[in-house]
Length: 278
Picture 1 (cartoon, rainbow, N blue to C red):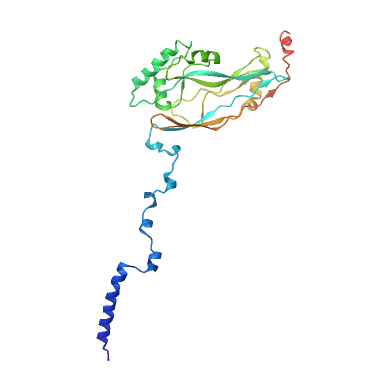
Picture 2: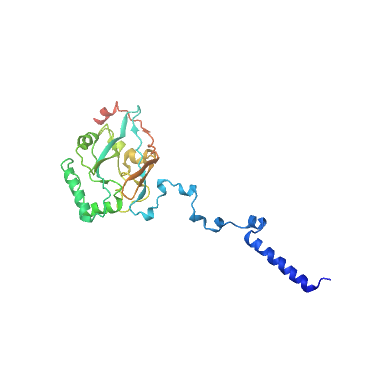
C-alpha cells in the first residue's frame, strides 16, 4: 500500500520537472493571445512608409523661421463697359510697377539691408521720373516681414515705358504687372461712364492670408459705381512656398480669377461725338 507521504513527494517531483519547460517555451495558445514586443512600443517611434513620404508643403515651418507658405489673392479684371454695338467705353490694360525684390541675407543687419536697397533705388531714379521715395523704416520693415514679396517703388507705367527700361534694371529690381482701367474714348460720355479708383493701399507688416497681389479697384462714379457689383469679377488665388534660404519651391495658381460681367449700354459712339458738341 502506497503511503500518503510518498504520493506527495511524487507529485512535487513531477511539478518541478514540468515547470522549466513552460518557462522556456510557453504554450502556443499563450503565444497567440499575447502582444508581441513590437505592439508594446509606441507606434510613433517607428514611422511607416505613408508617414515618411511627405511633400514640400509639409515642412516644419515652426522650426524654420525663415521658411514661408503664402496664399495671395489675384484681383480679377473689371468687366467691360461697351456701347450698343460693342465698342469699348471702359476696358482694362496691362500696366507695370517697378518693385524691389529682396534676397534672403544671412545675418544681415539693418544698415546692410538699407544700403542694399538704396543702391538699387538710386539707379531707378535715373530710369523712372517722380518715383516716390521710401524711408529707411519702410525698407527695413518690408525686409523683416515681407521680403518674400516685391516692394512696389513706383507708380503705374505703361507697357511701352516698361519695355524701354526692362533691360536696364539691375538685379533686385523687377517689373510687377497689374490691371488698370482705361477709357479709350477719352472724354466722350465720361460723365455717364464715370470712373474707378483704388479700394485701398496694400497692407504692410506681417503677411496676411489671401491679401491682394496689387491694389483692388472699385467704381467711384457713374455707371462704374452704379453697376460696381456686376463689373467686379471673382478673384483668384495663388500659393507660394519658400524654404529657409528664401528659395521659391512652389508657385501655384490654385484658382483662376474670373473677370467681371460686360455692361452693354444704349450709347452709340457713331452719334455721341455730335452730342458732345450740343
